[in-house]
Length: 167
Image (tube, rainbow, N blue to C red):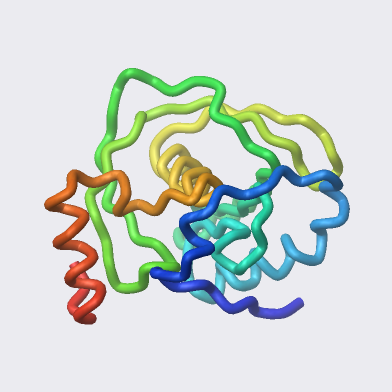
């Protein structure tokens, strides 16, 4: 196990879509390292492109900071459905450290994915789990949380990041 370097914006790889995973079992070492890196950062989710691996996989653990470990590996995920109800959450990103933004997303989603054994799974997520999964899913498509803001909000957030003042 080892900590992986986390790419920081404006690394161009963070804006690229990822390729599908062909062999989920081949990701075991990467996933182990991603969890170790995520927990050390400390974050609640980490997508493969954030560590320079351009494949459709992310890890997340919505409850570990409160003492409820619920690690989840999502390979080749897809969002099958999203609620009409929206929720606003303050989101941070390990690739844009020190910067948070209030992002509006569907309050509930149904996520389909493959696990490390190659088993197809499906989960209904709400609350923090839905927010984290959507945030990490966006990374697989080259989208960062500030891309979900209106242009003025995005510009203000990026200006704060670039001057090291956070938001």
